[in-house]
Length: 368
Image (tube, rainbow, N blue to C red; front, side):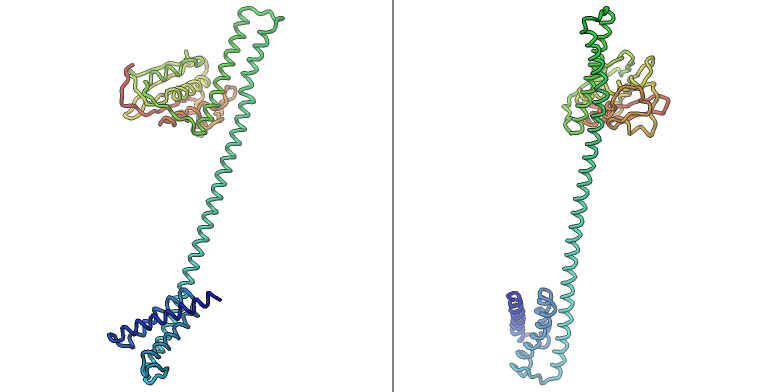
């Protein structure tokens, strides 16, 4: 009720305001020409209050114009037929304009409502997309946990059993062991412990990489030093033949991370090559990169597996009988990318594989 009263008052005020303006302009402009100014009252009222109020203001404007400005003044009598025609044209124009204004307001409201609905739908889609991403992340996390449990249940159990068996034999007083047997058991314990240490280290490295916590501490280092450090402590490192350039190139990287990446590539090559076959390391320098190639004579990698084998817990089709949890290449790739480099494989099935570690070249030469 109060809203209706307010609209009536504002509509009347609009008619009064235009009447005052016409009164002020009357000495300067023909009166019949000024009647169109009442549209300034009709249009906003129709837009904001609706066509019914616009029609009422149009009628009120016609009556006010007749009462105040058409002779005889201050009466509603109209003597000149031309004035009747002018008022009729005005009322028709006012009604049409008020209807158009009201329709425009309705269309604007509908467009605004459609926009709000579109925003709501967009927000809903974004929410669903976010939920899908979270669900996918959860699924991957569950898959990773499952894979880790499998690695723990098999790859950790094997060296642990070897350590326990050898330690049990060494500790039993009823076993008479010669020096050679005792040395073999101790060697088994050491080899199993080293394997266990590498596997635990790989699991920790993978978790750091996936959590984004493997932040490199970069320093200038010679590639020769990276290769030599990667070979230290590596099983069968005497099978690795290294060819280095006369002037050792330098890279600005986290030495420990790159050494781990290179050691994983070397260990992978040694595992997939037959014992008599050597593994070759070749270092080449381009205008912007240092390329470290690890070349084996194993079964090679097919084009279909060239990308897949760099995913965690993924192994090639020829991995049967080869020890490992499928972590080495994923960690090598992760550490390479963390230091601004990358790793890829160049291979054809049955022709061996060449794993390439590319690192950005530092512009400061380091002498060998």
